[in-house]
Picture 1: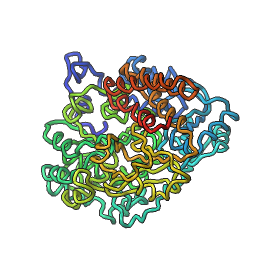
Picture 2: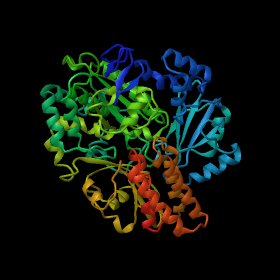
Picture 3: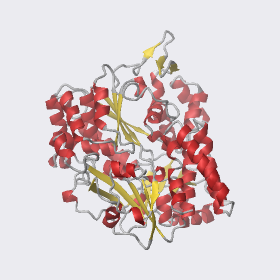
Picture 4: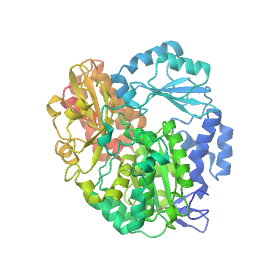
Length: 581
């Protein structure tokens, strides 16, 4: 049905009753459950919300209890389970946009349209966490009943008001610009193919796949290991270890591209997916034929409609060219890719929560072990890599891992993309070799507008630094030595005009809203952290509140199930150390 090896069951084992057993003996539903999220998207796109009758129908078709389906539907911010207006605008009020004055847009919308709606409210507009358009200064994601979703960036309050009152919207996204000369770049060299197969191949595209097919899986894995590439999604795990572990397993396997880029301040993956989709598709295809997987999934953030359309067109072009499907490039190897859209849940960027989302469950993280390389998607060995990681793979196979390892530093090899935004002259995605400093990245972006107050590196899950740390090399080893996280490559500069109390409180509010609720330390701790910061801003007992925040920091780090809770206090604690709040 979807390129799955077995026509009825995804991996795992069947009991006498017909259910699949996975993850410590828990019973899983029949294979059709994995179609739940696509079905919810179809309903949301068609009528603007998921009615109870429609949900019952979907439940019946997928052999699910209505309560189970309802629990999944209500998990996602982009799925409405109560009657909604025909057009709903999600307006970003996260940290990068706040630095550019998004609060004025919010105030104007409240004056004209009333208060923003909460999840489930029948309001024409809602406040949104980061929409991945940080270099634009402001953004809105528009859901229209009966039409595809649209993005507008930059956006004004007048545009939003006109859209929700007129009932229609078209894409209006300004192109991403960069002050860099792209002729000397690697990852950003082709940002204008936008799904043009001929242009991509004229620049060396698919030479990496050809070599992978020529040298075979063992040699291909060796090239990835020799490159020293580490994951670019934030965890920085050596990619070669994952590839070898999955390759050594027998039977059904999967490869997954994690394109659920939701970290506030991050937009590099969106730029790659929109401007050079074939690089990611080729990288994922190489991963599939190397590990022995026949099916790949690209889990795409739901707020990226332009990327969805360009990826869909590029995948079809690859199939027509014989580069996806039953006989890739005449090799006899079978591999195909399916896009799965997320629906507004930051936690689904965590790999095991992503698996649950694809399988039709709530996007909650799983306990490890087992690790994904042993039991991942549908209980089978699974390789998961980030968009930027996969975009590096074609060059590694084409030019060799040793040549790639000469770029950057010994422990941080290759080029790296950084998302520079906030109070800089030219926000955008910038490509440098590992080892460039924070100061150099800010200078590439035209410098700070005004006097620098602080820089947030790593996004909401990262840390603030001040002017004394601007010359720190941006490598995995140097940031680790400084007890900081490089994260996904976020650099947000804040000048002296910014109210840092508002920024830090917004970060805490973000984690409180995005916690999946699975574990008590995160579910409760993130909310208590935000409440404490609000009390400080309102003139409360600062010393007492700092003691509470310190206790919450320890609980969140030590007792949370996944990285969301474990990193939820990082930026707050760094802000306290620097005296920003």
